[in-house]
Image 1 (cartoon, rainbow over the protein chains, first blue to last red):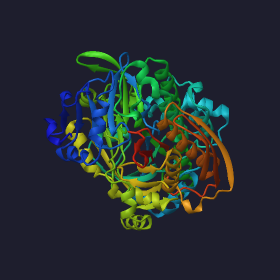
Image 2: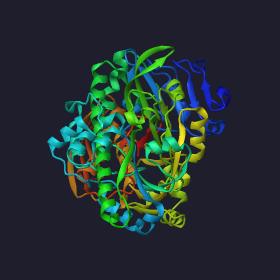
Image 3: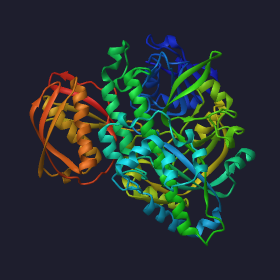
Image 4: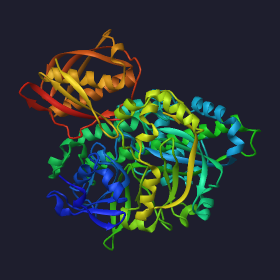
Length: 483
Length: 134
């Protein structure tokens, strides 16, 4: 049984479980966060799952948990693991079912006071124009040919079809298009599910939110990101919908025999994996890229819907209702990246399962506009608290393969949340705090009650303490659409 | 007659399922899943669909079975109400699935996962734990 005492304190915000702790561990495991974060990680199976990740072949440096870590179903959520491209593996479970679930932030010149009289109407109109919840509502009726193009071109497809601008693509991770997607690697059922869901939020913890920037910590960087104190921003949190779930499920199943075939063992069947350079690994990478592109297109279409809605409700009522993109990040993904490990350049497959890329200033993958500042890192909190905009650091490049946290992180089960809270009561409490909520599911609202999540301030303090991102601004919710 | 109970999981949904035999285990797991995502009292056995699945082992067959029922509910609006097995062994499932119009979701489940999945034989039948990604 692993305990907190088994961890070595590297710094007040970095804790290491030595490789010798478990005979199957190939590398140490590290938790990034305060002593309190480490302690919280022992409340569920996060650490056990992190140890399992450390046993996978070709893992580089450490199996890592970000400060928002909690139990998942294979990898812990908030987990980062990089594998050597030539000796290591790719794991569909290490990406998850919602491939390229991520967050997009749009900023504006609208002041909070300007929007206040129209907030209710705006939130209702957004709810009507941005399909949410389970089902087939979508903003776009895609044909088979459209879907084929979406899978390869991602957000580029959406911009070509009038859903946004080239500037949006520049401010999207990988330009909104991951190379290497192959449509024939995408299972038939994924196509079927994907056709009817382009431009939809989905359910669960997905949301669309209108926020106000209530704190700026780094005025210069905030200025480059387009964030000014008192101004309105919009966050969109969603992923690849049923198409991504189907890709993950099918490849998890197809790979079940791969560990035996390639001669390695796994601690949990959900961690099933194949060598990156095997036919199984390459096929999954091609299908994952396609699903990730679908998610980029999905958020691009939703951003367009949000802009149209802002125009419809606010034109002539506020001075400037335009929304410009801050960034779009993926937080469930495996990326082929080059990193420096023990002084040498290594081609790695970096799995971020509930973790955000946090590249440092100067990184060649960043667009010109963010080359000097570093990459924006979007960290949504719970709907009753706050969200943060951080920026990537050199320390993240050295420590965590350029990765940081992805949110506040759950700490209460959905069952417990619905036992303790009623959706109507949560909505009323939020209303009293000045936060409007639209949702199709009151039960879903109860599951996502603010107290079901860790304190986002605590998580961000740990991120900053560990040096794996810096604070730029904090935003506070005014209106929320819950999927 | 099988039984199921919900288990707490930080982010997702989980069930412990017991069945007197494999058929009982598969039916009970399906009933447990339906209770997580819809109002089971509104499920009706009005139509029948034929289902044939093959898998390399019994755990994969169980995951396939549950994911097939999730697919039928989401994409064909067909809610599981029961099943009669023609064949059910460690690798093959042939069944007539009874169901009716999908009554709507109370919660959404993306998939049944393989997380720590093992079907155990006990003195009274079979037992397993299932984690669903939400």
